[in-house]
Length: 240
Image 1 (tube, rainbow, N blue to C red):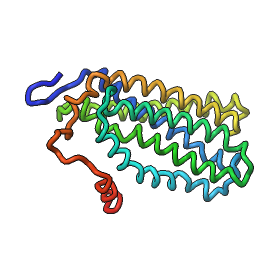
Image 2 (cartoon, rainbow, N blue to C red):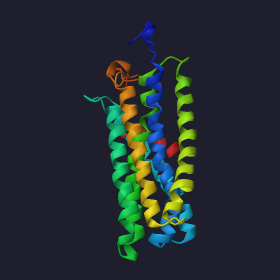
Image 3 (cartoon, one colour):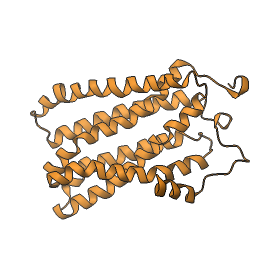
Image 4 (cartoon, one colour):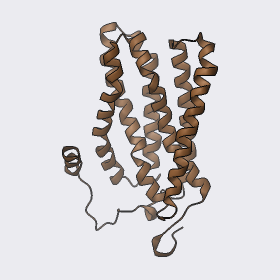
């Protein structure tokens, strides 16, 4: 696999498959676009708090990033460094998103929002686990400076084209089937569509990177190099 001077390239179809990791996580972010409808209509949260919920959770997402990155740095198992986090993160996202949209509104009113906050925190940990490997996995996939930008091209195509098509499908095709309102049935159906597309994306990215998610393609893992520590992650949070 390795070429001259340690530079390796990758077939185009593997780059396209790898770009599906962003697609997989973006499907969940797409489903969270409807979260304010759910919080206001079914959880009973005030409009102002519902509109700021995503911002609050994104801050939590930023806190978890460096610590998941630390785990990735220390991982080197039978299934590679990156694939375990992609798969585990997607499983956590699937389970927590199901709980958010199907369990929360059945709880007593006073317990709904605190429950929603806790499950959402777990949701974003899954999101972090899958997202944080995007750059480390890209390094494994290809370290050719001429080829790396091509990966970004595929990501851009998927990140724009699929959400545009999905918006049309959900709001033009599916929404009228549920009475034209963002009711519980529609939100559940939309979540299932996003979960299904995300699962397909994870399968494709694992296939695409399988031949390169190996120690000989990991950069920055030389045994003589100082390993990352928890205090390094705390320093990132304190000074970033």
